Amino acid sequence: FALKKGEISGVVETEFGYHIIHLTDIKPVVVSPFEQVRATIENEVRAQQATQEFAKAAEAFTDAVYQTPDSLKPAADKLKLTIQTASNVARTPAPGAKGPLASRNFLSALFASDSLERKQNTEAIEIGTNQLAAGRVTQYTAAHPVPLAEVKDKIRAQIVTERAAVLAK
Image 1 (cartoon, rainbow, N blue to C red):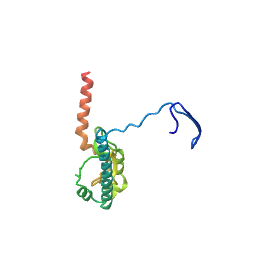
Image 2: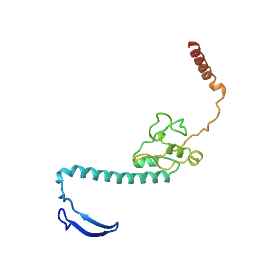
Image 3: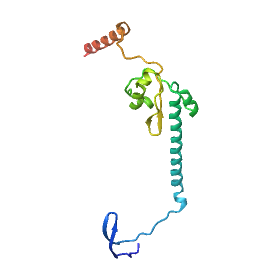
Image 4: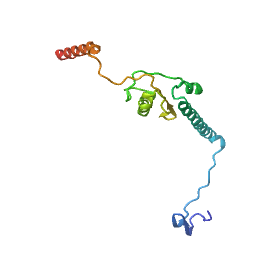
């Protein structure tokens, strides 16, 4: 900063080695008026506060889910959340699934041994940006072959439809 425009310095030692500096231009610092940057500063502060609030809520959610492993109700009541239920959930996301049921990590946690055998809550799983979910299996039926008597009518209808399509061609 002691150089004037167009001057060349002597040898300067830095943590990156030795340098000779040629000053080609000096640009003065431009300080924007407060009113011009006020909205930007307010948005940054709000974003920081939201991040802090989410971190607190996430910690409270994680603790509540862990402390009462056999129910999600205490966590929902504490944080004013709604409990959603689903039936016929598969180990992989169904086409068009949204929310927690679209998350492979959530489904993996839901089908873990603690969840299935002990019917305990999953840990809090991040399912998206600033989104956590926990789940609990209340009823589980392992995959099994369906008796012919139960699917006989469906199979007959499918075969009739396929043969009709072939005859129509």
